[in-house]
Structure formats: C-alpha cells, structure tokens
Length: 423
Image (cartoon, rainbow, N blue to C red; front, top):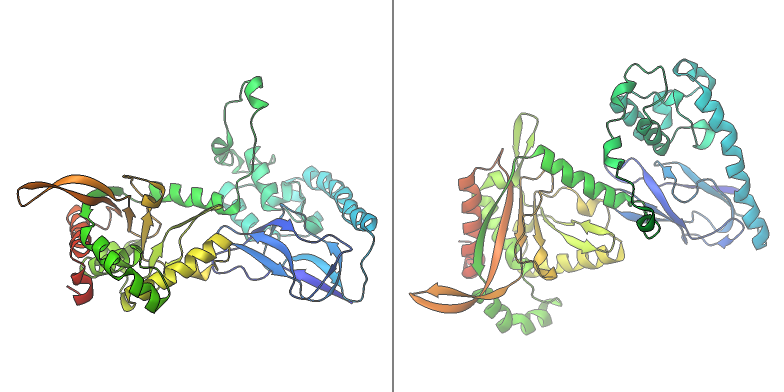
C-alpha cells in the first residue's frame, strides 16, 4: 500500500515553499512521524514528517524544487522492505530523463496552443498566476519543468528575464525584474575565486520586505539617548531573586517592551498602519522582538504585551529566542505585530536607523550601553548611556508624536517606578 507524502498547510499568506533537503533516499526505511524532508518558506523552515512507516518508494520533487500546499512530495510503500543502495540511486535517475522530453514541446508552443497541455493559467499554481498577471507572460508559451507539464515559478522567472515568448501583447513590460539580476562580469582572475549561492526563501523575503518598506513608507528616524543607570542598578539589586522566583534572567527587553507599550497608549499613531486611504488604529499591543539567527532576521511577536508583567515578557522572549535559534518558530508566532523593537547593541552597534517592519508605522532601535560624560546638576559625571532610534512612517506619525514617543520611553527607563505605577 502506497502512502503519499504531501506538503502541509504552510500558514496564512504563504503559498509556496522550496525543498531544502531530503533526509531519506528512495529505498530507505522510515518510521511514522520521522522527519523526511525540510521545507523552506519565506517565513520559516519546517520539517515534513513521515505519514506512515515503510520504505521510500519515490521522491517526486527534488531538492531546490518549488512546491505548493498539498503537492505530492513522494510516496511511502507501507509493505515494502529496504532496497539496496544501488536501486535507490537508480530510481530518481529516471525522472530527470523524462523532463527534457516535455520541455521542448512546451517551449515550441505559441500562446495560442495552450489546449495542447489542457492547463489554464491558474492550474499552474498561485505563484505562476501572479507572475503571469504582473508580467504579461503567458505560461502556455513557457517551457515547463514541473510535474504533469506544469510551469513552475522558476520557469516563469526565467521566461520573464528573457522577455517572455513571442506573441504576448504585454511582453515588452516583462523584463522589469531583470535589472535586479544584472551585474558587471568579474575579471577572470576574480571570477575563479567567487562563490555564487542562491538566496534562501527567508533571505529573499527579508530583502523584498525591507526594500518595499523603503519604497512605500515616508520613513524618517529620530534619536534620543537614555541614562541606563536606574535600570542597571535595579537589575543588579534584583537579578538573583528575580531569576530564582521566575526561572528566567532579568534582561533589558522587558523594561523596553513595557516602556514602549506605555508610550504607544499615549501616541496611538505609532501603533497604527495605513490601509488604502484609511488609518487603522490598533487598540492592542503585539510587540515584535527582532532576533538574529544564522539564516537571517526573524521577528516573533509578544502578543498583548500590555497585559503581561516584565517577568512574563522575559519568559516569552526567552522561549522565542530558543525557537528562533533552533529554527522552530511557527508562522503564527511571527504574524500580527503592531510595533517592533530591535537591539543592535548586542552586536556592538552605537547608532543606526532601523527599517520599518511593514505595514507597521514604528520601530525602536536599541544600541550598546556606553559610559559617557554627561552633565547632571551642573556637574560633569560619567553615566551608562544608550542611543535610541525611532524610525517611523511620516505619512501617519508627525515629528512631534515621534519625538514625544521617544521622550516617554526615556522617562520610563530613567525612572523605572513609572513602569510599575503605570505613570
């Protein structure tokens, strides 16, 4: 009995994934719920477990292929036994031999010959349909490398870069994406020492979202500095008893999150977003905490941070940090944020201008704490100071509101009693 291995539901707004690697080969034995294949989406990396015990009978999609939810990745023979390695290697070798036969046929078709495949544009998948609408390139005239004569996203991107097939009325507009791929050729001596690596889905999404934020929002950054003396003394005094009682270390993020929530309540525009010609004000406070990982920056969301204590916030951030490093964050845990905090200080950054996490209208950048001379009561003293940066969407947030927001955060951190008394 053969059991299909299918792509699971990937989450809201995620329509496709890339096969990062297979853990098993055809002919190898597997047990139920054993990880079989790693999928990489534009948000997270996830593993697909074996739906049953048996032997891998077929791998239908190779590493690097783009797949959609519900697509068949391969099959498991529940009654089979492990085959010799040689047979396992022969099986997938047959499939690439079949693909070139269909590719020339598809490329030979004009746009008017779509009935030959019997596939409408939408039958190739949502990603292909979207590219077809945006570029004007008809999938019927694109060489198909997917299963059952389906055009993949990669096929479409290649056709768009080449200007599409002849006969498309809107084909002249198709080469628009090409400039992003163009670069001057390296000198021969340099080219031999270069390494070209395809960007991961996550890195592509980070690049696209950051550039979209710059292109869409009227982004501006305002700065202030904060004396961290009071927070650092409080941490020093209570860190041991805090960790003993709550089982988590007392860090800075809990203080900053609470301070930001208080400021957001006073200045709701910083917690809003633009939707068409409307401004949507969020009367809830889901704070995204940027976390750096080996694969890129991810932003898990602490939901309803206004209802949580500093201890609860620190616990939640600790859980998210571990999940992020292990690649176990779910898509739901990274959606729905209304404001973001990013801490470049852990890497030694003195000052930066963070980019908005669209569609949010504000992001706070923390930086390293550095002892600097400041004037207090007419005397020059040394204090642990930190620069704060608020990048905001000037379409929603006025300069006065942005500066006031940072002042409120500064006041709360320099007098932490305000966080306890909700002042």
